[in-house]
Image 1 (spheres, rainbow, N blue to C red):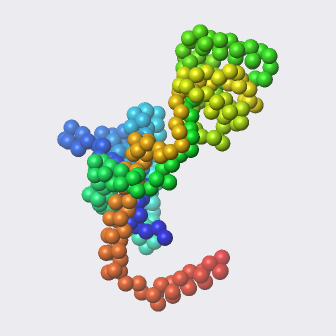
Image 2 (image 1 turned 120 degrees about the horizontal axis):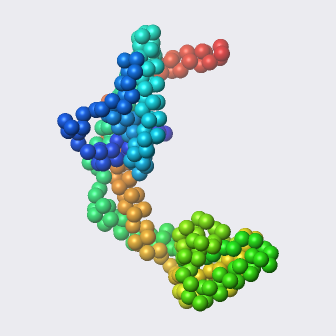
Length: 302
């Protein structure tokens, strides 16, 4: 069951913001972005709304005038509607007033949880110690089969013209042409082509059969395959590295394990606080059942 003390996206965002946003100074006073009909949306309003945007893209969003204008415009619309709702007395309705109070409490609770996360989250150095212990204790989890790291260039097509072009590319490579440059220029696989044809490491069973056979047939880094025909066209492969079956290096799982350790520490702290707080909240079971029963009757009438 999801609880208040499980990690909310907003709490994570608030924590990220707390670690990245500068401390406000007098010179950073809110500046108006949109004004009209007695409604103003400021830079501070946008920063508050931006807490819901993932930290890794937040600056890109706020740094684009068109997107920033849209964010501010949306806030202006919401603020105007909220003002009209108040003028109509909708904020005096019991259920609306309760929803407003809960929304405020949720934001405050998220901020408190973010502070708890910051306090309970191990730093990278401490987390790495635990990450290494996890890595050392579980060999099977980090075992990988034999893998190869290759680059490829794809010439699309199955006709003689495509084969001839692929052969020309292969001949150029044999004469010393730069593989990455040719991949960027010639490969029909634009995704890997933009990376110089790099496909990274992969094991058996991940590629179509002719491609896989050619990839695992190469033995020495720098070795080129011949033309490899698949349903996608003609490929030229170059071996970058081979990796025997065994345990994946710690360096490749370090970041993932550190994040796992830090996440588990924060979850544990939340669970402990949840248990501590819940013991004082005593459910009125008879009222709960009576209320639930009344709602069932309401639904049956619809």
